[in-house]
Length: 327
Image (cartoon, rainbow, N blue to C red):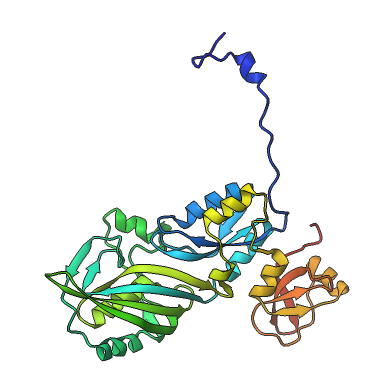
């Protein structure tokens, strides 16, 4: 009996099954540093890379807005467990801020809410207000951020028409520098575009810096371009575009930027340990502390990353066992 498509059930059952191809990474995986194109969401990039790597175990260390380009750190297989630590690291950006115009999203993708001439602003005035936004500051995130309010993303509430109020949060801006200024005369209004470089702590919103700079200068402001150039130690030099990754996959070339051992050595201070100590960590035991601060990696004599460790009191304990005894 034929189906609606003209293919019988027997013919369908006798079709050769498509062979499932193995993952392009081993069980430990590593990091994939992507130079994200504009227009892609971080979720879009993860989905694409799952297909390229042939594994569902892919995640990202912090999102980038669709408008933004640049460094997006992805982890594959067991290296996804590193991402929670990488999210906490510092970041660097290049951006363009338009003074004289505010938008509902604090960037160029949102509706314009106010326009004010800004051509009268002097470089000294701009520099003084930038100084006020440098260092340890309190920042109110953009209303279309991914911060959750009672379990729902702020941007979802804002796009549904809800009035969103977010509390100020402490962030650190270590560098906020103007590289170039361009005065834009539209015939009716004079805007000022600033090309800037920003280095900041995780959780800092560059859109919010643009908004706050405009408010401090009394003319409003928003972000017109954003490119992330660094996440912790990972820079654009490590990164490839999705087109480059797709070409590498087509040529059956390695896709990972760093395997899990190289990724750990790049991202964390290293403590060299013995095979016996590695065995202790792999089986859930702790080591004697040696006075290292923060999170560091324990690496065995073969160069394998065994665990991420922090010291407290008389113990150096694992916060993540990278190579447990059962793997």
